[in-house]
Length: 204
Length: 208
Image 1: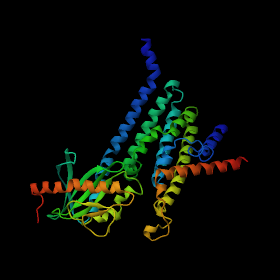
Image 2: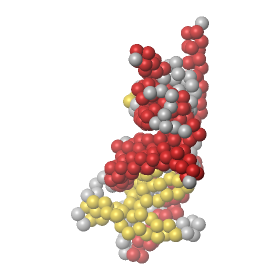
Image 3: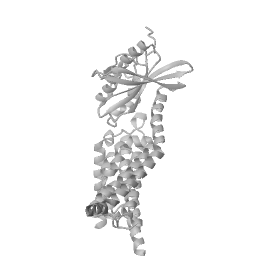
Image 4: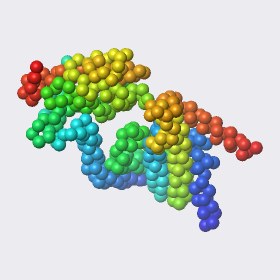
């Protein structure tokens, strides 16, 4: 009995304040969680808007399963941009290993998967001043209008010529090739899956 | 009463220079190195630290007479962790961009030794008003130190201060070649080191 008394004497403050602080955090969380979730959703839709500024509506589609280079199944989030009843293009979300951490991209493609609309970086922790320039216009503009197919990373070349050759950022070869590899690993597989499902037409 | 008022007054200004947490006490050096690449995140970080410091000092001071000596660190950590979680949630809700930039460094305020240090050195020995004054003064001193380092780093690495262009860079047709290394960890160590040297020189001159 005296042991229990001693225990309570020593720890009552800790027990009481644990509950009090727990309650405080729970109340704050309950008050803010809607706003936090809304912010998360807005972040994705803002990036979609930047890729497809003309689209009236951007609808989330059923995700498509493809094989990763390591032969495991990956679900790709897919969005369809519509104006009226016209399909404006597709956006898919991919992620892969960058220089420092995982890079997550939104990649935009036109309605029949012929040309890329471009990509935007959803999250990355690449080195500031070097790797994070994958989000800059020098690198990103090379993808705008590039043909859907295998992209090649080149160390030198003219970044203003839009074709399947992408000129790497000097000082950030690993980040540059990470983006190209991520797109190469997904895009053609995704295209053939979508052709199978009849979501897009083969124009050739 | 008047001696207590004097104490509040002297506590309120101590953190700004005499006992500045970064440049004089050299406590909690993780944020000055990690989040000072630009002014805006540094300032946001400073505000979070002020909030946590004032709240935790207040609570610790309230329960100072109930604390068991061997359980005090546990109580400090519990209090600090609760307020840091609240600050993190507030930041995620109202400043999502800043929250993304600061990433894990906001939750890491829990282990920042300024806060636990002030709880131990001041809040558990003084009354509520002195503790709150100490929280404000240390927090503001910390924020000023963060902003001072960030100011130098952001200006030299991008030519901007608080995202306003001061020095036009070569990329946009100006003359300033940005020092990319100031954006990297090396820039933080250099600036902090030179800042410490500068503060020491001034202090030596004052004493002489």
